[in-house]
Amino acid sequence: MSLLKVQQLSKAFGGNQAVLDLGFEVEPGELVALIGPNGAGKSTVFNLLNGQLKPDRGSALLDGQSLTGQRPEAIWGMGVGRTFQIPETFASLTVLENVQMALLSHHRQHWNFWRSAAATYKDEAMALLQQLDLADLAPSACGALSYGDVKRVELAVALAHAPRLLLMDEPTAGMALKERHALMTLVQQQVRRTGLAVLFTEHSMDVVFGFADRVLVMARGQRIAEGSPTSIANNPEVRQVYLGVYPTPDGTPA
Ligand code: ADP
Ligand code: MG
Image 1 (cartoon, rainbow, N blue to C red):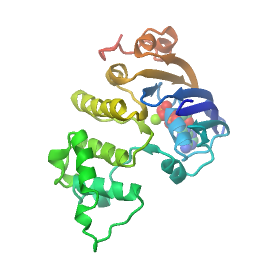
Image 2 (cartoon, helix red, strand yellow):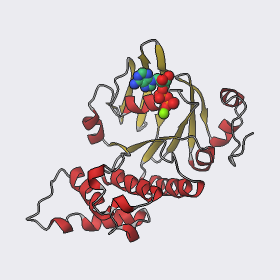
Image 3 (spheres, rainbow, N blue to C red):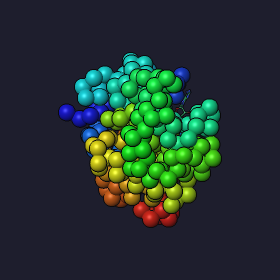
């Protein structure tokens, strides 16, 4: 059974059919890119999967359990993670403390200052930071980090919840090539190491072709192609929806 099975998922906003009869599956340990032109419906798919939106029809099953119709917190609790921006109020906390807080929340405990709060989940948090090349930054305040480092901390916080499926909507937006490759290398390592499944949207073709195991292409709410990065790069219909500006795998316009 697939980890995620989406069938006939549909959502309209007024007369605007954002997602129409969409079906796809994601297996454990897969890094899947969802691509398509602006307005294709990618973010709507994410919001249908994470419970922010309810579909007009169709279903999404995680390990056979229905995600559609559940509240965001319930979906989160079922093991569907997403990256969130570090809230303002947490910017003054250190990188280590942010990950400790996430681990506490995952284990449904609260800060208990009478019980040596500073040590709570410290080893687990440090282990996670090490996996994400963040150990050196453990004592730094999040508010003082570079953009690329913040993105890695956001990933660490998401992973602290031990998701089975991680949804990442434009994880590398605003990043330079080197930074986005560093982030996606870490994501890929987690996928390979833990069997985590990741569904991500991406505009940078160097990331799509460099990191995705499989690519799903949407246009006007529908799936128009699916396959390996190489087969997608050579797909005439995909090239057509990108109006001849579909970039080649090295990122230069075709
Ligand atoms: P993408 O992420 O691929 O750029 P979106 O899922 O954001 O596409 O949008 C798909 C379509 O749905 C677009 O036409 C967009 O304007 C519309 N849309 C998305 N969210 C809303 C909303 N909350 N209310 C109304 N229309 C929306
Ligand atoms: Mg979007």
